Length: 636
Image 1: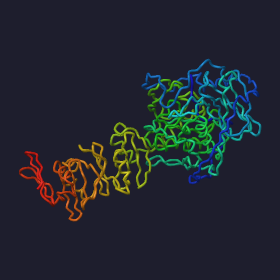
Image 2: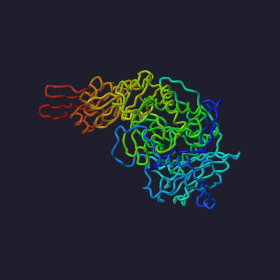
Image 3: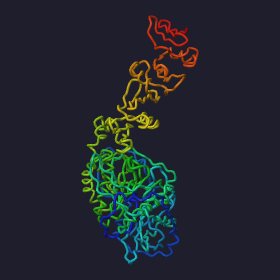
Image 4: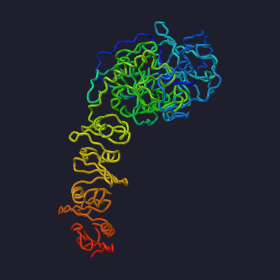
């Protein structure tokens, strides 16, 4: 059985530095892209210098954990598992395995690798006939001559959400930092290694790598957002995405916690470079659209934006095989199989998770429904599973991630997250919940976001947009009217909504405080009306409930008249006299066929009036009559 590992690995020492001090939340670096470089060495070039390694029972047991050949029990049972064994929507399975080679830790070789970069990984062509899931191990030697312990890594078995790949399989990478020597340990009999290469990443450097952390936030109407360094601030080279468009899901159902299994002796100034290295490895070596995680945090209390697309919507990452959909992946830099997470690291991890879950009105405790599964995971069938809202990577995939020491802290992390979460006093949440909540509107798609003009907004997956307005409380409208409002100029054009979106038999409308009414007919015609035409339509023609129905065209100025065509007729405002009248039904059609305001009938002088035989209307060049008995329309 195959598995997915955590993402990035680093040779580990036990000591972790204390929390970073003295850097303020306002110390944001200037945006800039930093170029990264990838260099590759064929393993076949180095193998003549390989040495046999003694069997290592402990390493063999750890390798079995990351390959899935030692399968612990699931942490929860399926709620409604699908019987389908089809591949999941967000990850793919490798080709069927052939006869396995001896597992790592049994009959191995080691080879020393010249160090060129700061992060290393192993990759090989995907079309090479596979054996069992390949696991190798790395260790590093520091300047003082000490060696790290072995860190096993295995084929990630992962492709990106869009199926994008480099055509190569790859292990998770390992951050080596300033190591002077790197050693690779591998199963001597695995045929894939004849085609493997060692990939090294040089992340580059920048003055903007200087550390900055956020002060502890307090819970207000909505949980405060911690300082998260943007992609531009940590130096993301957006050309590596190669135009890739992120996949966005319906909501965030839960959070997957990871470690990168990397070096524990990195500095605060190294963190941005580590993030760039992961990004380059995921895109240049594995061929993914982007970095796999949504957010990366470090032991100093820094946080970094991960995958492109925004942190306020459910951008789908590539971090938990089979369970990427509607999940939020947060990785802590460091190896927590050997080290204990710092207080600063746990604090920023809790605050990032609390902020993200607060935005989708989830409390962080208890269980939720996870939709996923893949043949190479702990849940081999695609289905719906009941799991905690905050889980570790090992709960769904075969991996040591997020490390035993961090995994042991997940219960207290959930408690801390629930203490930080605050959304019940949010006006947006109150209106969303009181009008039907998720059962009516769907779960939250876009978390509460300041959108300018004195407004905050949240968007439900069903399409409804909820806004806080400066004077009218919380109002909502659907995507059709909202999109038209934004396209026309938003609050600068029409002001703020002072009603919700209202439904009528003819369509939907929203009233704006600058005297405009946005309308959408049930046939899909969207426009607006305003001024004297709007006033007439509302007060004299009973709005969309009356004979005119919904507006069918935009207002226009013709021959000194502001006119607007409706489903059942036309309203005219004479700019010279201030008179407003309308034509309707067949009489309106008759008038339009004869040239309208510039035609042979002239312009309307009065409104439609009822007569004993039907109706009539005066124009400057005659009278238009309708006979209800015969249906005839005449002019003279």
